[in-house]
Image 1 (tube, rainbow, N blue to C red):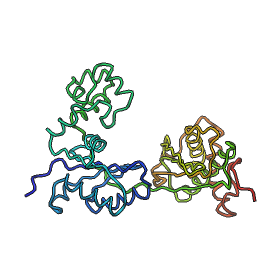
Image 2: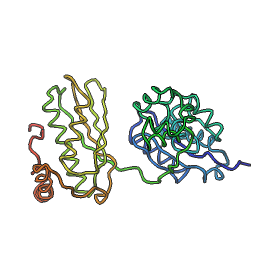
Image 3: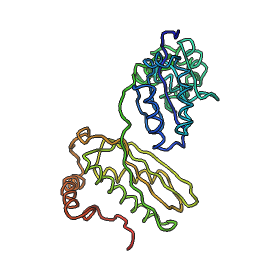
Image 4: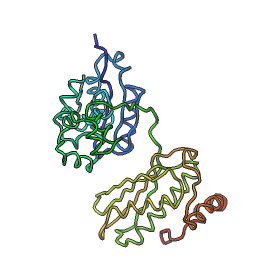
Length: 332
């Protein structure tokens, strides 16, 4: 007879080289084990399996091993799974699973034994600067952080951050699984017909992709939360960067600005570029966006007012007839 389940939350990590398509396949497979799944893009997920244990006849740790084997066989994706009672603890565990690929913390005593000796920077959700601040005060382990008086931690890290991280160090995290579908995305690519060194043409081609995606998601009445840029270099190597937009948006200006910041962050120096792929991620209905906001940039306000007009012209007379100047187009 299976004991009453307590620690039944999974945090699943896919290998860093997993493609977005394979991540979706893993989520589809996970839905066969439990309906309570929260995708965590780009390559993770959270699942509550408490209601599935009686059906499968095993505990949460053994069920995680079964899921991992099926993901390897059916999808070809290696996953690491932490099993605990809270999000932060399970996520900390999934980063330290060892050779088995699954770390099951079945009770609070196991959680304390696991978290206590870990370095403080291993706690899920803590930033490098916060870890450095704690270490400067002699708090080098998660156990030391958990044992420290809350008032002291709040003085070091600030009120809200201090309480949150100290609670997580003690295995306390009230966040529940928020069930929703995998956020939608859309992409556009441009392949150069030769190795491209010229940074002006690379930037122009990338801006053209940003305009294409902005046109597309506005036509679908959607807004994007983030952008991912993948650059394929000569020889087959790739580089990738992801950026979260300051606010949900489908404005051409916002996507162009975010795209250029992604390219600048890659800091290419005379790289031989063959292909650019830009992905607008976490697409939501347009009514979830922030709406119209007042801006002190009059030029930007004018461009935003013209966007619906440009969209109508392009819809009537042909794609990209009207739009921002300076976009790269392949010579005919």
